[in-house]
Length: 360
Ligand SMILES: NC(=O)c1ccc[n+]([C@@H]2O[C@H](COP(=O)([O-])OP(=O)(O)OC[C@H]3O[C@@H](n4cnc5c(N)ncnc54)[C@H](O)[C@@H]3O)[C@@H](O)[C@H]2O)c1
Image (cartoon, rainbow, N blue to C red; front, side, top):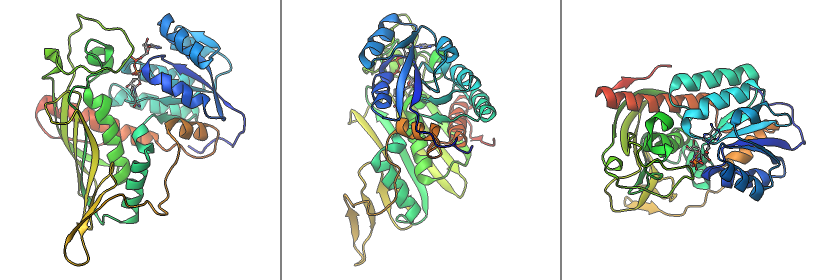
């Protein structure tokens, strides 16, 4: 979609969901001179009023639907349990609002495609909140791939493995009917998106995946994330570990690991490793591994990014700029659909025990 004509008017933002992620989001929006949070919605009066008071948000609603129907809102940030992502994003687009939807896109690809169709029909910005892309280290890794520093990158390993980082057992995160999935949908989606973005390859061909529910269902591995209520009787029925081999167009392979809970030495490990014909590298550390000119092997640390072009800001500043017609959104709808298609395929492959081909 071509951006709307550039405007200097502040973007009037409504936030749906007053939970943990919205605490920082409200600050990010209000800290940007181009935007102002004018409305907030949450069914919990305590969380609604606490955040609205703290962030100075005047309009308050108990449902997202009321916020979407209200006047004086240009853009909506949807930050609610995953089950409500697609319906609220679609309703907001149909009401001619720009939408930034936090991850994951939806519970499944058909839901995501319905939101994408609403975005296309409305001509408004739809952007997924993929924050890992905006880390300076991610931008440098992507620029190095584009500059040919690694040669032909033929393999990558993306992982986010927490040892005991389930977002509070018994919250909506651990109930499949509301979340749609566990660690894969919650943090695997970040590393999958980052890998495809750095590789600049959103063309999946096939997936072999496995997802496990082994620790959370024993009550093990709870972490601290999330502000929503706990249901002590809820059954933990989502993945606490998932792994996949994803084949991309051009002969590129990608291994993905995502765990909320897993026996491992580190409390947390996340990185994207790249393997190319000229060098390998770690996106997080910026290290580059390659054969040196004198025949030895060198590990280069902390190489300056030099004049490699990078995207600055975060997901919210990028979204604001896109809504105001300053640039295209850094996360495109087509990319987000490809990520959702791969996640669906990982769960499908795990369920049926076979490779799954992707064509969409
Ligand atoms: N980008 C990231 O790094 C990141 C990090 C954490 C969470 N998230 C995403 O943000 C979303 C929210 O996560 P969270 O950690 O803030 O969860 P949370 O449990 O802390 O808060 C969710 C809030 O949504 C409210 N809510 C529930 N149903 C609603 C509805 N229909 N309409 C309006 N509000 C509703 C709840 O009352 C609660 O206040 C999730 O989709 C999650 O995946 C993204």
